[in-house]
Image (tube, rainbow, N blue to C red; front, side):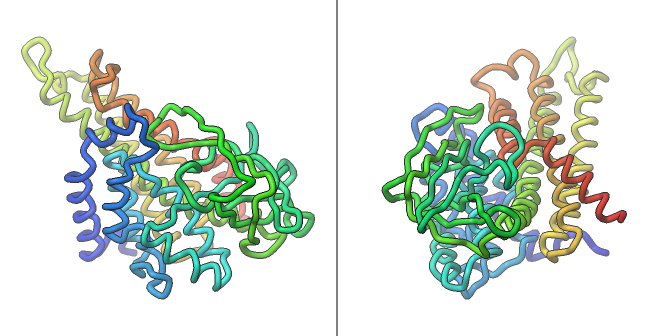
Length: 371
């Protein structure tokens, strides 16, 4: 089995890397981090003009009709530059939810707008601390109106639509609803996270209109499918950030001198860089497995997604931390860019469930395969 990307896919990756290097330098990330912008709107418009938001959306719905193999490469390059845009919540979550669960009418209405960036979407299911399950859901829908509170929703104040998990008396205990955000009955509570370059907010739903997405009572199983698919995409984004952390650490180790020689020549620094490389290489192997399962919609997707998610989460956090350590005392300062990746690593590690949640999914998926 050949896991290498083909020439066309490599072209997509290289084009994305060149574009982002020119249009998303560290100054853009720092601008959003230090300013009052919720995201880099100018960069977002440039990204959607490239067609990336519609990479895996079929052509009949206004997308490029490419595969998920192209999309994971775009995700990796966005992670490589720590792009402060709502790409993940809109593409990995909302778009996937509509692709997987939406009716034909919903797809015709929303996917073209998501593909061209006219609409930004997100997804919300968590309501309180701890694991979320159908039994813990308190959000309800009555006569087409939705009531509840969702916590720490990515890009909630930016998005125009949100996919919401609500309690159901049927089936698996949950249903998914599509809720336009610019209407009465919706308010927000802004949240300050460790990474201000990504917007997060609590969403209060108090009688807003909601449209069923998918089948009533099958929302929880569909949500798990959406999260598995998103986990692979997030894993590639995390991998891109982790690779940059290693590159930054290596460059500094070669340029910084102590006792008349580069610090990269000292065994302690060599071990740091080697350990980062090993974790990144393992994460990449797992990410390849996830990309294959996602693109082929393989039965192994839950196992592959959890494997990729856990591996990339661990690699990104480790590399971001060790990059700061390699930079020494200056690595902890505001002026050095290491902080971008440490912040992003921490936020991405919990955005669709913590490492512990995905490790538990990995164990359960492995048990099912063995059975």
